[in-house]
Image 1 (cartoon, rainbow, N blue to C red):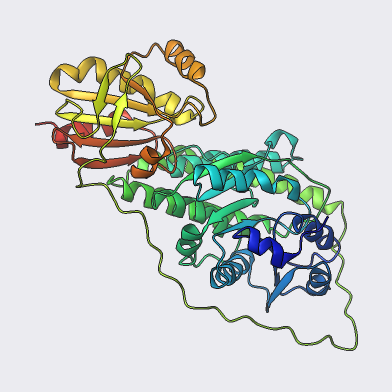
Image 2 (image 1 turned 120 degrees about the vertical axis):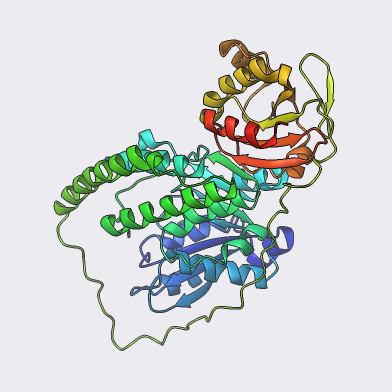
Length: 441
């Protein structure tokens, strides 16, 4: 049964947003399926076909912007409309049928039960056609390196955004697909919660609107910007040698994938030219941008006393975060499935073994309900031969108080329980030495 948009709006403060460009052939069934769960807003980004009319006939509210301005601009127009109409969250999905509306409840569940600010649908790269499987794996690796934590699928367009993240993303000036990448950075740097849900990987031979060379150029640009922003947020200086391997390898591998994609498109023949209809259709309506709302980022904990929480370690000992018992304490948030965590946990164990007599304390905190079980945690500790203090905490107020939006993240506390630094992403040897030199008496 199709849910009436007004009735759905009264039942849930969430809006489905579908940006569309020349999707007349596919958009109607997408809207009809989506309206089973949420009211739908379509932003027609200067289409030359009947996308807008068919979207309205299918029951969606339609905004029209001309000329074509790119997916990022279309999304921001939809975000402004959602804020003006009182919605608390927005689910983004594509108009071409690559996203299954039946999976919308997965996003809503994460938002309602975990307080997620950004929920991204994670695709299975193994089910993608060549060369998209290669380019997506490459993009995931390169962007994760820049972000300092593993981003499972940074290019998936199936997402849910909370109201406060929507407000923060409106400050962006990205117009194309890179806007979706930038919103991940905005989420992490504002200390908001980032989560993932598995979704179907659907490809049916639809034509992509991505221009490969332009997309690559913009992706490398925003990846470089991400690296700079993340390092600046963690107080690090730029170290150019870190760029050597990814900077040299990424364009080479990406160009190979693009060449293969171009060859595959050659077989398809020239793209069809949209048929003009006469007489001239009614003029489209341009929706001018509304004033940008003021985003309120999460307050930094650096320079403040740590939130007042008592942690129970695996051995039963209780430790108060504000009085951890060390001259310098590394309070680390991690998970067994987190690849950077797997790399840094042996290093934290080494710090614990070698420096605890010097007043250095390490506490590793993980949520056994976040994609892992308590048995998984114990198996991980055994596999990596870890004996450092570990606390299993399911209290979400702890993670919210410490602005844990992604993992790993480490807070460095002094003897008075004052947060002296926040480290986003994987810790390395030089990071540890840097913090010890600065904060150990």
